[in-house]
Length: 317
Length: 280
Image (cartoon, rainbow over all chains, first blue to last red; front, side, top):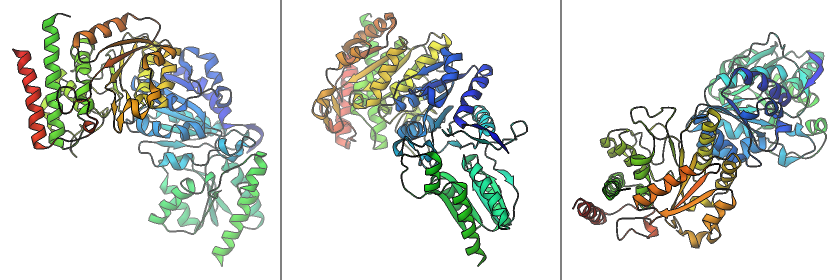
């Protein structure tokens, strides 16, 4: 784990996008007055003829993306998750997903780690909303390395993709040079047989720190990382349930509708297993320092450690 | 346009209305009023103006049409079958479980360039298509047909700004201005959507107005629209909801009503009489 370099997934995305757009001339990028934040300003500078800032009008941005895609472009619509996935939900459903058009929706600033901007800008519902839309693929990478591969896979996939990214600079935990990313496949990040933490997005880093803590207690936790929330890798989850007997999910999202719900659905049908869901407990976020909010909403490594410890003890008893 | 062509197009539009009526009556569901108001517009576009090839419905160089008022599939599918995109017999399956001719416009149907039905979204998609044409240096036109009630959606005006910002003179939006919507007249439901022409002008569009039931007037407006450079064009077509059937015209209940057997026969008789009169 390289703890030295902290890069926001949105920053990694902005950089990777420019690199991939040099090869892929079909890429067209749309923004809604947030290019400095979504990091598509890098693309705008290098490819002004393929960059369109449509102003503060996300619904229209998604509709325009649909029209571009209908004419063979790979259209990428960018905003904060709250607005690209939230405000433009119905446009995504009817103009993009229903006709199965090659549009990529990018939502940066997902989760409470947005920090001081507060609840209106901290999207905790996007995975749940978009998971219910047919034809939709959802990817939520953990770090810079994974974001690079996630974008590559999203561009190679013909059809709608939602790419969920964070605002906060985070450690890169995947090996940039040798990381094998496969769309729809979970990643066994750390072995373990006492319990499994299933993570998505930036919770991977927190879960890895929790694992270190739990080793002190003699609890060896497996870490399974789910970058693709849809389609979900059911096999890696069922296998973890069978082999470790206890599943704890961790996501920077409402526990309703997101990763925890998706895992519970799979296990309920295929392998009923004791579970705990870490995420926001059906509440809105608020303004504050990101690390303080992560602690307050029970999303940091210390909170994860506590939940695993308690759930494990209860389960053993 | 010479009178012979004009009469030919009027006949085609009447055939379109008869087909639409049959489709809705057969399916016992569908939107007659708005289909009748848009029949002449679609006929002029598909028979006289649009550069399309029914043998190659996805041909890249084709003109595109976005039926933003996506509920008027009886008129749209009838126009597409009339132009040869698929056999007319298939229209008999409209709205059936096993049919691809669904209630609202769908891209799987040959000739349909954009899935629509949720009002307000079509103009944005049309902007995207026009933008793609500009990026590629292609010379196709994109036609977007708006309902008038649909202009109450805020997204329409987001799209209007976008089209003007990028000087999309390859985008021609036609407003089927029949002045009725589901719950009443547009004037009652949202009087402040007027004045329309001035609104589009204020958003940076070139605006034309014409009789939406006169093929010559529509053709003239569309030709004039193509001469405009540097601006998107809105054609506000003055139409009558339910056009062609006396008891349906300007009657709000015919937005989504299905005719009874007697009403169907009466409507069919009126349309056929007009057709016979044109055939002289």
